[in-house]
Image 1 (tube, helix red, strand yellow):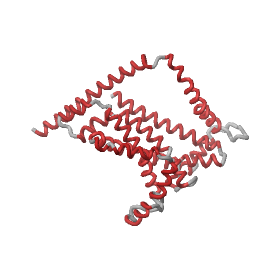
Image 2: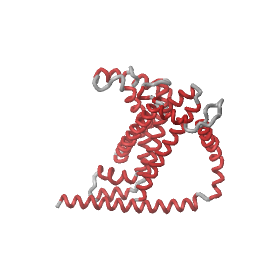
Image 3: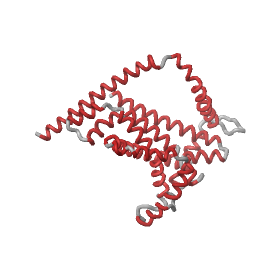
Length: 315
């Protein structure tokens, strides 16, 4: 009987959470319609003209120029060659290596930041005495990159203090070949994990406390509430956090360039290195083709993710 009662209690918790979630979605739709009708009148669109003009000049026009460069033979002989440069870029082994390394680093680093960020935000949410975790995580974000690089070279470089100790204590686990990639993941979490924690904590605070109280009264534990109730309610927060962490992972080229220069270890050779090397060689056609390919692929990935999250919201 106790097992059946516990199962019925869990079912009641899920049903009430689902009802509250549906009610919240309905209120969001009503508030969105209200905002579209009253908060954003058409006359205020005039204030967006300066921003749209700057975006059109520095992004849209620049992207159109990039498209033009990618289909011409070169700057001297402006002959239309179609997809020639795109095919050469795709078949280039260095671009393939850079693209695979970029995708691998972005996927792993984003998943780690989301998982650890949600776990630490739950710790702060359930136990307010751990609020110092958020402040500590944001500390590295406000430091200049040059200062971070100096600290990182002392502690986490190939022959730094921590690396030498790990080589001695765990020689079968850590080696000089795998250390650059491993240290870069640690650096990414050190630099941007605080943002993930802050975003998730902001989403947790905005959830109605009545949902958590009703689930607690029904006998649901902290793990059940965090995994089956709070996490589904944070879909929009997770979507925003995923996109932002992906952008941050693509920005890690700056740190890798400062640490290892234009030709880093093979595992850390990213697409930005490929683009920068062709820019130095004034090979604007290959550079433009690679930039367009990267922009199109990232746009497709983000569109698919947003579409998948929107379908989940409609269920």
